[in-house]
Length: 201
Image 1 (cartoon, rainbow, N blue to C red):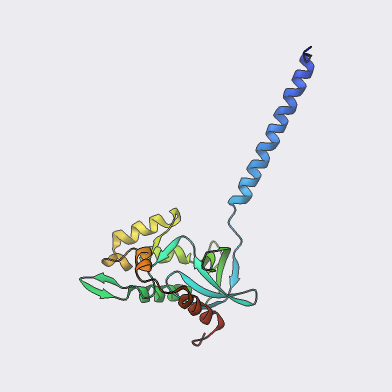
Image 2 (tube, rainbow, N blue to C red):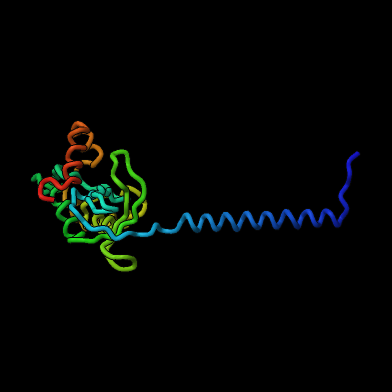
């Protein structure tokens, strides 16, 4: 025999369901708000700029290699072409990041590590709302392309104004890396030497 709920019991049940749904909604909104918050930036002394999107900082008593998120700069050994003449755009990209970063310190929101062991981070020259976003400025100056949606406007402006690598022709950075791949041990050894402070660092 099926027992029917009284009107009073049905109203109470609906009220409990609505309350539970409201609680779940609030919990979801709270989680989304927390997840969307920018990570707190940490002040880190600058040790050395490696190339147009990588640098070494001092963090928690150790040298840490940082890969700037949201951008992909030309490689240090990469050459570009302008007016049918090849030029060392990779070296100029590193020089551009050196000028932006100055002597430090930088203010970086550190996240996870990539497959090469580098710490992914967004870095500024001063805490928000001051300072310069290194990734955004490297793209705006034309020394890097946007690797996600964050810096698409800066990339479009650099291309339209023919700044940096947009002055002429350049190989897609991923294609250049694939064509000029070196043994992993060699590149890993370079990073380790830089982190240990060899070569005057």
